[in-house]
Image 1 (spheres, rainbow, N blue to C red):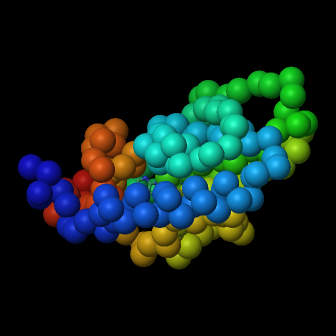
Image 2 (cartoon, rainbow, N blue to C red):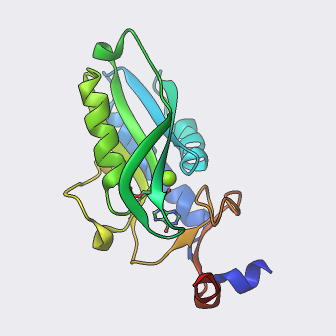
Length: 183
Ligand code: IMP
Ligand code: MG
């Protein structure tokens, strides 16, 4: 079943863990004298956030947001709805690091950055496991990037295929047969 959905494994588990370790070192260095608040963008970045947080040797806090972008299965539209938000009285003393699974059009993260800046955060930066720059629709560059990938629909390690397969420890490319049957 799963074999017929996977075209190939794009980022194996060991590579993901190597990426997470590298990003963890960069964040440890950059946030040594800051007040780091990790913002996990549910549901996709759950796995990445948890693994990354374990590599940090800083005192940090965690917040969670959930957004929905309208569109079909493999294409997000420009509209974004906040399904879960957070409030803090000390936002002006928070250095937010927004953690995403993947940047595609750039809509989600560029809007979240604007929102958190408008709320008064001291600083807002972004960290994504995967980046598909070829698909960008808005001018957005993430601050920390795990891996730049080609324009393929991927799933696993938090990323879903109709809400399933988020638990896979690797990132895979969806097979052509599967995509064909969606049409
Ligand atoms: P953006 O707003 O277009 O940058 O899209 C970001 C969101 O679209 C991500 O948080 C994912 O939820 C979803 N997304 C984009 N590309 C993929 C993919 O290849 N697989 C699974 N989800 C994706
Ligand atoms: Mg997502």
